[in-house]
Image (cartoon, rainbow, N blue to C red; front, top):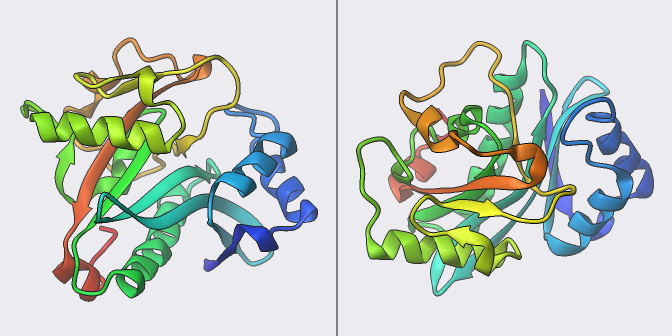
Length: 221
């Protein structure tokens, strides 16, 4: 598995077509038009390939939100095969590596939108993940949910108690990943009860990649 990351401005139409082909026959049906908009909204695009075959991709950005170092994953899609977990880890490893370069010696917040419990695999090894089983979010946690929803373009569409975003039907970004063999964190299914991903609903999730974990390259797990 080889991973490359570059500025979205360098993304060609041929690459967009290749990315669209990865889910042409299944949800979430990201087409070229939608991916072109993502190219405009995000700074970095990451591709994971097995040989010449595209296995996954991501749009992301590294920025400070209110001074806090943040890795925001606007969209991440993984091919649904036996190596899906390997693909997810390869993409995240490159993103965490870049976060370390951008924010040395600092904790970094990872934020994204999930379509299913499987997506919690992206937060394995992170600290203070919200939402999480048996934890009542604080006022600051809810504020972070609103901040992230605003960055994802739908500040007023989030329920800051459940962290569920509800936007109009149609293609919506997020983390599209289905577990092949790796375990899903216990108890996370409860957060998706009643969520209809096909109608644009997403769960906003965030957690902290600690500086020492980033420096030791122990993420992702």
